[in-house]
Length: 173
Image 1: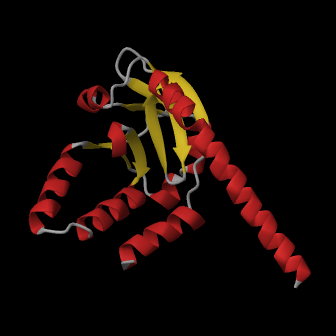
Image 2: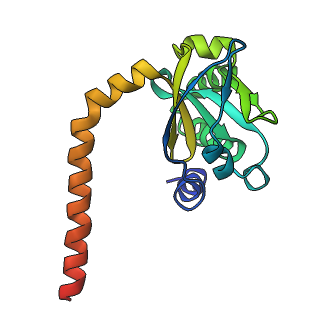
């Protein structure tokens, strides 16, 4: 694993850990209230003041603190197999990214093109996903949950069994 990716992994595990699910409505200007819980977890003094709105995997709109966004772009560019892949990644990545700031009320403006590309409607769901916030069209999020809940429950059960087994093995040593 390269140094950049290793640093990113450590930050995600030891630094910022965003969790939770919140439903909000976009206002008529396309602004979104970022819940106080998320705002307080993203300490702008520690994480830098800028946030980046990024069209991420599967067309999901993501909000990253500056440091995490920089690490991701560096890691992705270094993983490109050919120079033209790196150029294409940078071209698309930076074109589909918007540097944003929260206003005094905790709202941010969602770029209209990014909203359209992400298929966002008036009602959205914000998810804390370790080092970033995902912004989903609420209907799509509910469908995703429905489609993946059984898999999640199986993985959670397996993870719990693994932890319990390790604890049992430690007690028997």
